[in-house]
Figure 1 (cartoon, helix red, strand yellow):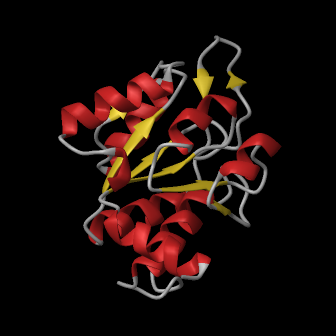
Figure 2 (tube, rainbow, N blue to C red; figure 1 turned 30 degrees about the vertical axis):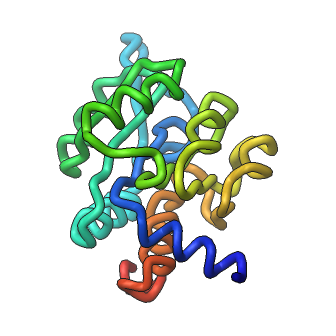
Length: 174
């Protein structure tokens, strides 16, 4: 079995796409207004990718170490649910999410970029990292994406996942 065949087999079992936020859905920089309000910048192409994943029958959720109202708002706009924020213990958060949703890690694809994501990356069926993820993550994921975090990495992950599943050509979600 080739590596692509193995990735395709695992991708076909995926029912969930879970996303980290900072460094994946955003470029990882933290912006604050003069009044101290946190501002996050999301790429519209990632939103289209998330909608394509949902149209293809995937459930999409967020698993983030930081808590942000901007994330809750963007998730609501895109129909992302569940949204788990403020969890440094991503492995335990994953266990709780899986139990609550009645699924298992071998039904999950995950996009992460930094060391706190490793416990999730090592347990899920398929893992992706933006091009600018830390080296430890890039070494352990199944697919390193060409796009950087906040610059279309989520869209690319969706296109790759759907392409591997065989339901769509990798570029059809574009």
